[in-house]
Image 1 (cartoon, rainbow, N blue to C red):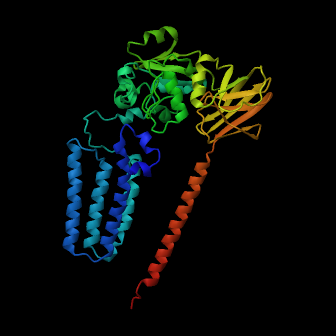
Image 2: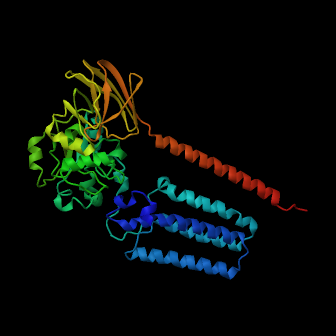
Image 3: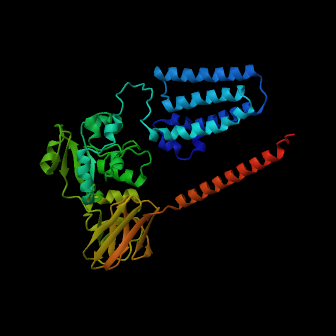
Length: 438
């Protein structure tokens, strides 16, 4: 039943179908709030209130004991919030009306504080059923020397962290870097979304919402499928030519010797080294944008990706719809002026009409302008973006502006407005119904 109520949940969680139960927490929280509200509004015998508090406290304590002995982990923040809720319920039951009026305000403080308090001080601890060493967050929040080196060269291309001992065949389906991130040898490879933290550009990481096109591209690069959480490059794909259009210029590998690294060390020059990692440079990497004049058409993204292996992608691009009119030959170059997560600006110079290919994952929410005029963003090579350009010098701008974001903001604003109106109406009604003091 839950699968029918949650579209796409089943294919996303085919490996852990029981996670559909995560939505059960929301109605339970709503029922708990309704119970507290009813207890504060209605005259209830004190023994019944005591019984309810004792029962809730018993369940809470049992959950903590269960977590400590191998059950589901209960974060400290959740435990504190639950304990505060019990105390506030007791206060509302045993204190006079003026004090009881403070209960909703106190509960609101708890609800707001719970998600924010990690940002207001040291990270909370949690009961750890695996007994693995905790994160050294204070250290990981500071960019490593290798991260600083890559940041200085971010305009030259992306990187990927690679250790065949972590993503070898035996561990390819087990999360790889994500499940070994406590190991300093692993997190110095700058995977597991550390690129976002340090302001770097990479092609892999942990993300439970990978774009489907990009996942298919990485699967084709590796020649194998991995769990949807990851977009890692495996030993089968580390020397694939499909890395080049992703602008992968640098490989971050362990400083220690590993089986499977010798060929990479022979093929690529080493440009950086410290006690933790070495960085190799891939001269074959494409720039972030280039111009092509030979266009082919494929039926769908999978067919487009399958066609790439036989093509020179510096000269040819594969589209999924009738190609725009371009010159059969020509040359040109593109320079990046701005490259941000939701905004890309380029200066393009071409001696004939062509297709600008941008090494950015395609998604329908991207919008483009060429010299200020709206232009279509086309899916290219199964996963990237393309924009038709004229001959001469052009200014191309790409912005991520999905209509869903505007719709979501409008819905949120409307909902907030309705809640404020309802609150104002309830307060006005409460004043009118309040008995006069004589």
